[in-house]
Image (cartoon, rainbow, N blue to C red; front, side, top):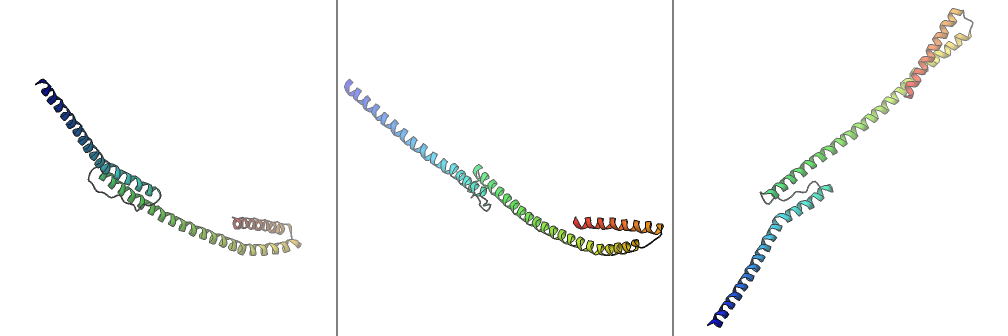
Length: 173
């Protein structure tokens, strides 16, 4: 009768309720497994790439990201590897150029020092005969000379003074 039918419907409803709850539990479990696989497939490589990026920022250009897939994550990893190779090559080139520049600077400084020593020595070598000529002119000018010879020798003395000043300034440059 009605009471038995009502009990059957009630039992069926409870069984349906348990089946729905079990299905929801199983679907939630499957969703969590899919989420964990997604996290492993996406987040783990991105975290690895982030860690490697920090190493590159610290100057380690030899790090490489392992490429396991052929998807966007794999493309990102290959691009990262090419980028670090380019950074490494350019850094090595800059270090080489800086070394060459330092060597060229040292050579230029040595050449400049040699040039300065040469100019100083040559200047002194040229000043000695000028000084001797001035002494001789001074002696000649102290003697009695006619006016024309005195003017001519005075001009020569002034020319030697000018040459002496010019050479002295060259030596001091």
